[in-house]
Amino acid sequence: MNEFYRREHAAAAVAAPLIVTALLDADAAARFEAMRRAYFPAARNKTPAHLTLFHALPGAQMAELEDELAERCWQAEPFAAVASSLRFLGAGVAVNIDAPPLVALHSGIAQSWHHVLTPQDRQRFNPHVTVQNKVTPTHARQTFDALQAVFQPFDFMIEGLELWHYRGGPWEAAGRFPFGGAPS
Image 1 (cartoon, rainbow, N blue to C red):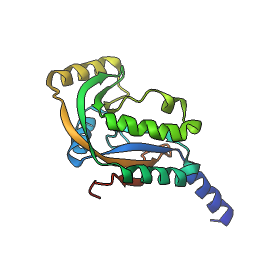
Image 2 (cartoon, helix red, strand yellow):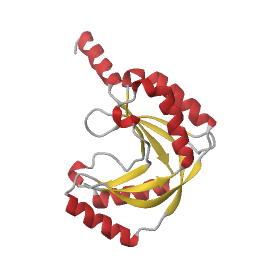
Image 3 (cartoon, rainbow, N blue to C red):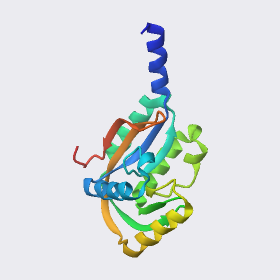
Image 4 (cartoon, rainbow, N blue to C red):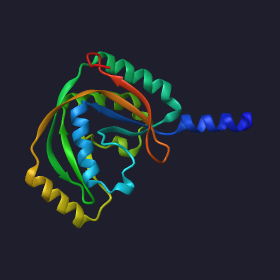
């Protein structure tokens, strides 16, 4: 592999969009993952269960984003969240998350990065974990109705943020930023 190709490939890798998700406590992550494996079409399930704050921040500014996430997370403490209810998505089902500190954290980051946010990331932030997507509306409604009959709200902790590279397939871990009081 020649040096030009290596540099171009490295530049493209850095420029891949970055995704920011909440770092959930281990029990909640396992619970959401079990739901996702049960209901998400296996052939399309390329990522673990996640709570996305930002879908596509600029990869070319990864160092600046890492600095901001590190600073914000160092100053924060883990906080409680509630998996409060289910949401019908039309082609899937999500679990709504009530977490006012997460909404505030998202708002602060969005203000810092407003000039590069995509239309999707400019939308109102409604924290949720998608446990089913990309199915027919009939299938999604059946799943929603079945889950609605047994769903019980539950508490969990948000312990930090995670950063991911998006390169068109499974996400690649790019960083973990535990809150100041969170175990590493």
